[in-house]
Length: 373
Image (cartoon, rainbow, N blue to C red; front, side, top):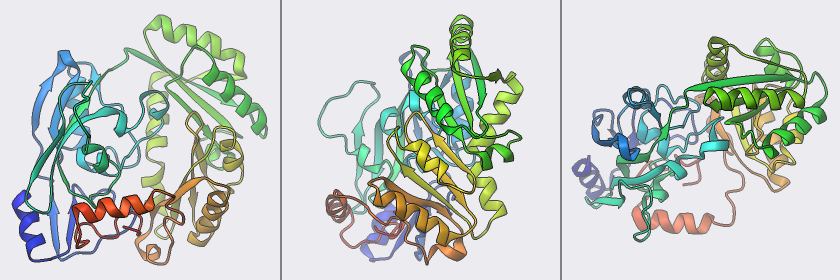
């Protein structure tokens, strides 16, 4: 991969980097004559179960990484759209995360080291294989969420988490009472029970999943005693019921696969993501007429739109209120006419300078970062 990158750069040929290409409808579209895939790079480089660390090549399917770690009761607690189909490098480059972000964080919290190949033929190592590493600037963090516009991720080192022996999801139904749902959310995140996930579904999405009204889903995990105590304490938040293990798995799989399923059914649709304050995420969710989901413990709100123009207007409304947001996924037929990232923010000039430092000719995945880089 390093040699292929250097040769293409020397010829000043535009390059498209990808893994399994599962997220081709995410962010912007890169069109290049030379396409370089990491799909063949699937090895475990180093695994230290006792130290809770692992290093793998970027092309390893994320589902395969999960299987390897499950043998020792461990996990990399990332999930999100296309995580089952994607590669490790793709998950990191796109900064994919989902419902468990509230407790475990994002890839920036879990990646402890990385090796990446630059356009001038260098293989750069950043970080290491220890959880605490304070030796200098961690340039690998720049690669997370860069969509391959800076360099090609070759290997990734993760800190691992023990897989909890027990989990339980409680479903709270609030019909049309959003205020009560937010009050229950506040009680959950302020309490000592520390839920793994705090997701809030609007009525349109709840109906798709066989439920009614505003639905608050709380996931708890740990030992039997911890989960039982969390269940008892959470019953004070409102009318609820607990999912059995099979229904719990189906529920969270359905949440994770909302975007892939929607894109399959709506070829000209769009998915918008905005980052709100915890105070405003309920209002943002209520402003959606179609399906909507809030990761209500972190303020991330997603809306699924059949009409791209409606998606743009909704995004503009919340960006105008100071939120950060993007059209995260969109159909190929409509993407070229959309403004995917209407307000990159005050650090955009720094981002452009960093890009110029790694790729002054703008050859690598040009346009992939929501059409602006």
